[in-house]
Image 1 (cartoon, helix red, strand yellow):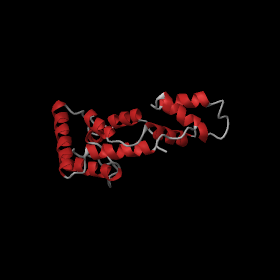
Image 2: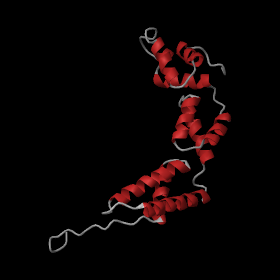
Image 3: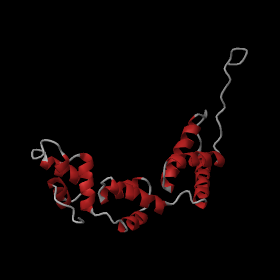
Image 4: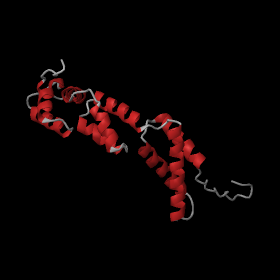
Length: 184
């Protein structure tokens, strides 16, 4: 409040490339990201900042904001802070370690904005077998042999849960019935 009692009007801050770069750098400090995912994050930040303005932006302002986002992304790419291939590799390793099926991992990578070709290349280089991932998923979710009670009564439900997670019937059945992993 000012001495006369009236509140000072808060002037909305403009969207600049430097602000977008700082916002993107802050995001990348906390999370790994693909270029498309960072583009979405920055677009949401721009929308929130522009929402504080009294009038909505016109098409030329939106185009200018999109160009600023692309410029900031270009700087991140030059500095090698964004690399979709390495992001996809590390994300895939993490997902497979947690027991995600190949299908589920591909869908999650696509949702993060990694293009199909990069996803296909990364999945082709994956050394984790589906059966191994199925065993990890069953262990993590406490399905099948990892269930403490009602194991036989819940067998069909457990197999169905594994299949909904993207595993084939043979891999789901092997994990639920406690059959050894083919790699062992």
